[in-house]
Length: 325
Picture (cartoon, rainbow, N blue to C red):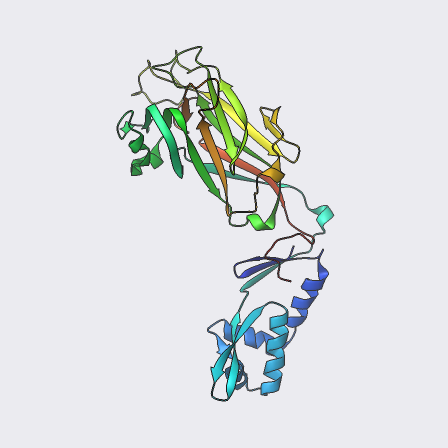
């Protein structure tokens, strides 16, 4: 699992060549002293030799060994007597995994996103609006209100048509072999006041690939939502349905029912440092009935958007484009 993350490297017992190379490079007291010196500033070979009080040839050989192991970098700089290597640390930390790959088990990472934490709001059409626990946010039926700063505190968002895109940051995604992922949220249709039946086709896409369509049967009301604040009118939308979308190597599922053939390999999960989740009422569906999206303090379920990722740490020849080798 030789993976470089900035100035950190992960090494694995399953790839002993690089592990041995780095271990050998750090097995010399002189080379350790060089790493200590470079922790303060970049230095050329002559400066290192003078600081450590060792011959220039010994210092140059030590620098070469550290450079070949990928621990430091050097570049030629003009000097008084020709060019001189200016050395800098490439790595600050190294982690070693001594567990073989067949003993590595899937881990689960859970990320939460407030419903107002979207990156973009595209094509929003009235009826539309936002509310927090205490009041409305911005102006009703004005799509411009979807970009006011107070939107981050939204606990209920509704619109007739359009899309919200959420970006979940994954700085370590290059080190992860993703086995499955799930996105869950509470939602229902959007009608004047509330209405049953009132169908709406709601699409979910990950990294630009639509997983499928869920047809919400109604805009839910008739009783107060379990978490809906008291100031919210009983004549308006009250709660929704908690829906979970799942993608793995075989396809995409909604509440354990297969909805499409889109699988993990179609999502380009390692092409960017985040996972994009797009929730949309598109214009190419049969039932354009809007959406209400609920936060953890509105509706029936005490949760915002939740992204869960099943993964294990990458090992083997295809570990990462940023491989140390």
